[in-house]
Image (tube, rainbow, N blue to C red; front, side, top):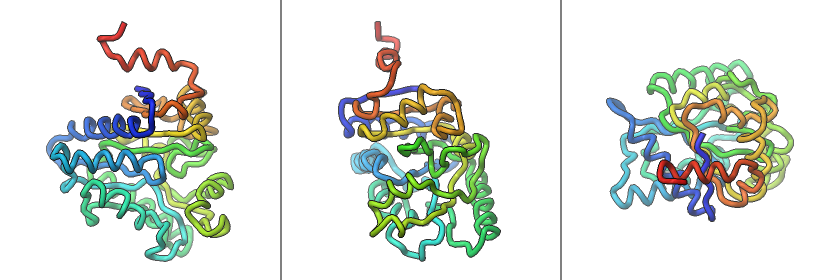
Length: 262
């Protein structure tokens, strides 16, 4: 696990974008697959990827985008549905064609229909050859995607109940917390771990406790993001505020210097 701490959120976004592009550059013989997270943390990363496109350093016209999760029960076209959010936050920034993106289907009328759609989503990821680089954020309670505390480490795409804390945190995007859906369809932790590279970006002091628990605490279902420790190629990009609770900060900084460090 590589932990990169930057002085500002903007610099953290630049380093996260570089990690994404490096991971995608290793794909050979097929179209690359980029896993997409929504929320406020990755926006700066997507803007940096868009800058790379504008400068001719990246091209996503042949890439596939695979979203992490979606709410259950929002009507088609709802502005907070992740299918809609991904249009301005990703497609407009990086030039990813709308027809080459996929979002879990949360429109099923019952659990059976939602579960069938979740299984179809798993098959779609497999048919594309798997996710090459998965962009991630982290919830204040340590959730990854919408895998709330208690999620199984080997879980696959499925229906999950959102925690009260997650619904309160996401209420800022809705008129009222009562408007936030109670359930979602989310890639499982096992699905996320299948990606060849994980790139997590977190900024702000509100994420400091969750970051410290995920990176330096025990591997536990109580902190779903602790599965980052279990992945062979994880890059974590933080600003100073989000890194404030890390005990091993000096080591991370030394390791980031590479072979040229003392």
